[in-house]
Image (cartoon, rainbow, N blue to C red):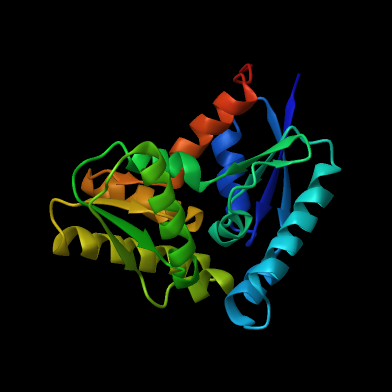
Length: 226
């Protein structure tokens, strides 16, 4: 039976990443986008963590009414708000960063985790540290933010954003030779893939491991090609 995956995003640009990645599989994606919640979390000092948690839970409960088999949360800010929540009722919540963290834990060499959105760094790093502790791993890790790039994607300047991200990743490769580089946000994946193809140097991204996890969790089969 065809599965239905609900996806919660903070920006519409993430939709195509998920749809294209899951296109070979027998799954229907239903997308929900709420940029206002991200803006409240990032900019409103009176918007408390408890307020954010209540709003995300409300959104997930609304999504759950759409006969979903699972819910995917792609915004790392929303994931940080959810903390240890794993289900909405009986519907499992899949978090984009958990398969990515599993991938990072496979490496023992020094790593650089790259962000464009500085507001997601603290929550993501905190969750990564908890994840590594749970697995009994210690990572040699540093964080790098590509300053000034994230406003471009929020303004709809996608091509300019991708160029800036690609340039930033190539600079890091030159400045930090020998260190494994990964991108922490879905919006950075396209630029990371472009740089990887140009340089033949692997850049770990959250999408590849996420798809493998979704396929496994939902037991998805490939669509028969005509």
